[in-house]
Image 1 (cartoon, rainbow, N blue to C red):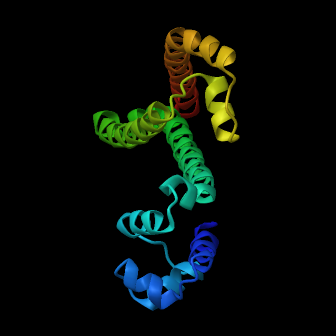
Image 2: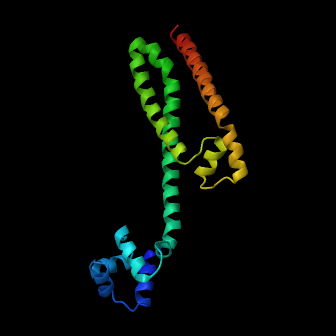
Image 3: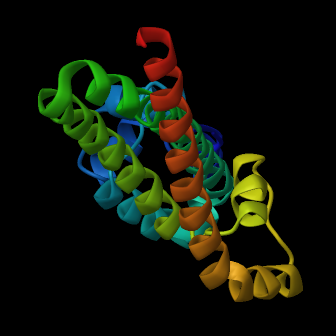
Length: 195
């Protein structure tokens, strides 16, 4: 981050010591030293006072930091999306595979285990959907671009927005069909093994 160098640059341009700057913005000299050595970050009130004192806009004072902060935030969002998507995918597969065995071996009591597993899977599905909504991504291509830290151009984005309604339907229908087929195959297999 560049704010520490910006503070030092503007302070020295005005021929102010750390102590003099500290007096003018109502903090300690140690606080100024910590900012300039990148040990911590000034609060918004201090940033506003410094931008006024230095005669620059807040944007000019923290310009380099804004881009880096945006990148850091986006990387955290991408990491969160990757983690939650992976957990959701594993839970979904586990739920699909466990329906038939739990029901076969435990009968109606197995439904309790299926319900708990389904609710946990639903929780992570909700987290993924929330992240998708916050970042305005829905289609496969939008999600893939986001997870790679890229942005779609405006024309491609509009095409993808047009695909959203039917892609969601196809995904839900496909998941339902796959779940049904896996459950039927597992029930058939369990019946053959115990029969």
